[in-house]
Length: 260
Length: 59
Picture 1: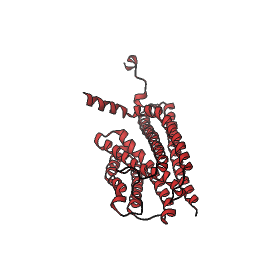
Picture 2 (picture 1 turned 45 degrees about the vertical axis):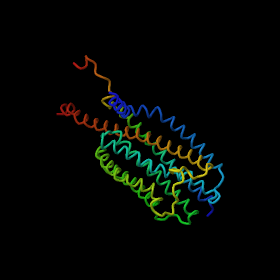
Picture 3 (picture 1 turned 90 degrees about the vertical axis):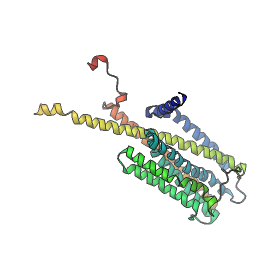
Picture 4 (picture 1 turned 180 degrees about the vertical axis):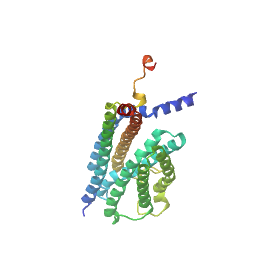
């Protein structure tokens, strides 16, 4: 049947050994395209004119906004992987959400730090506990909590299931972050790119921003695939060491008999 | 502080965190590859990576 064939094909692709082969083939290409996009994006960023109100500080937007988007996208990828862990119990889904957490934490840290550095000259303050900033800070803490949880448990399968539940519960924060600027009165400005009535940002700023966003997104997926590959290798090393320890436990019989 | 300071600091933070992330993933990958190579050199392989037993060897 076509449906079962499609599921079988997806399942085959999600096989860890097949994933390693695919990662080896696509990672150099992804890294190369990411570097080219960053070069184009940074060139456009630094050759663009300043904003009539913000002046050159508008350039902070080209790193702040993609990092902020990625902080939410990474968590969404983790939520999808968490469903894979809980519904299909697929080991590659466990590996996916475990390895995405440090990446998400890093991009959220960039968003928070650059937001603060943008806020000081524009708002006159480094930080304010408004709904957008607070909900992103909570997201950062959730990433740190998930990293700690994964490292605290020895059994990767159990850690994955507990993390998956926590990720899905924490997913409620993503729409709160997105719509916080509409639901509450915040110092942070409302959305100006992803809007139902289209972007309100000038095209001169929009193109460099979109190219930087694509570059950051590709960087995330490149690092995520590489980190997943590393985690698969780490699990293979542990499994092989356990196997070697078991074999060593059975082996010394000959030596002790000789000694006796 | 001038606006140039805030712009430079933002790009410096973004570059530093991104480069740390790239190096961490790269170094982790190298370390795991080295461990796997060491295990293989000492004759420890995954069951699926071992050569299939021949008919003669099985008996």
